[in-house]
Length: 294
Image 1 (spheres, one colour):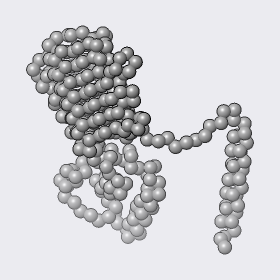
Image 2 (image 1 turned 60 degrees about the vertical axis):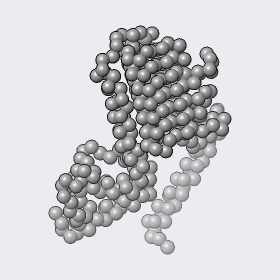
Image 3 (image 1 turned 180 degrees about the vertical axis):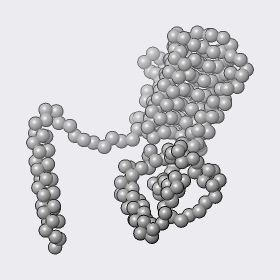
């Protein structure tokens, strides 16, 4: 038997739970349009009519908050970034190798104004917020932020569509040119230096995607271990470990940069493990204080 205080607390807690259940029941009866709460399934990969996306297992990064839907093929070392949508529901989409679909970009297809699939080649960058709709982007081209490439348009290799430009349906952007405006028109020929930046931007984004792949692959245990290292670097070690200063710089990085993996592997996502870790840290701190350590 517990103490009198424990029994009083349990009794009060039970009464509160019953009262809450009764209030919830009354509220449900008063609702005009009843709402049933459901778990929202992940939209990272979605099949349409039994057709599932085909994504290379070699170095391809698809962010958790992005959506790859239907008849989509993505080649090796390519990436689909946060909030981006690649939707092959009424036609097919093919994305080559080392191609990067950046944050909140939209890749779609068309069957209303003609049969227009979308094909994106190798070493292509579709910048943040851009739209590619039933169009063809050949190898080594760059689409600027919030630009639109519309139905049956073709962007040839070694060309740049400037930020905010609208390439109208059926337009062909020749290689080696910069196009801008709405509707987009040729501005000038690209310089050799500008052409050389196109594959470099693709490489930079591919390398950055590899970093995000590693962060997302971390389990909760790894995150907790890294958190302990951060405590150590802040001058508050959890134990008596001693490490050469140069070692943590190469294996962990500066503490002030933070850990990207914590966004997805936090105590919020893993409350039980997080609580256990917190209690262990508090126990160590208490033992340390009792020893009189500085």
